[in-house]
Image 1 (cartoon, one colour):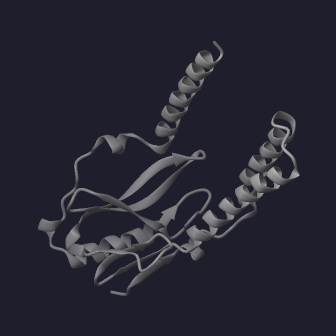
Image 2: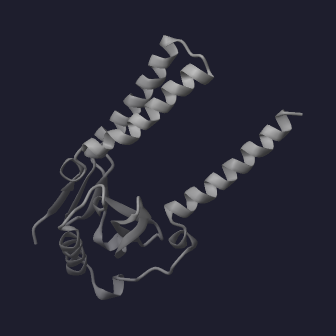
Image 3: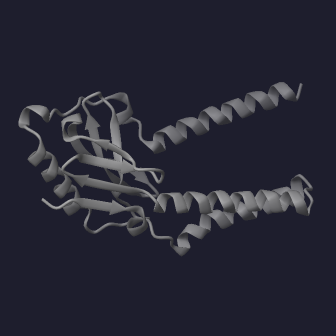
Length: 192
């Protein structure tokens, strides 16, 4: 079987729609900094420059991601170094993690290791923002590699856990509610 390589620079190409959220945040910073906090030019430049630098750094880092599937197992790199290799004997299950994001579901290939941990194959994913027409075929090839490299007794589907029921959207809503309560309580306490 041929080695499979999935690279972030092939999957996460920059798009003009990436500028929208950055422009909204920068505009909010400029308006709030000038009207509410009366910041001068220097602090405003630092604030906006820092925001743009963080956005650019995160985009460049995601383009450095890569994953390799081969005879030694699955190697995942998050942009730094050689990455982490999970041998086929360490992988007990492979599935697709699906969660809602921006209206349409995002699907990411995920491995389950024998120690109970789960790891995304970060560059094997599809979403509205980064569509991949070949996702299902690529995922099928990864599963074929896994089945070819392991025996049936090593393939054990893990049980559902609490984190399987908590999607990023549910966590965000819960975090927003907690933050609102904390801000409300601190405002009431500070106003006395």
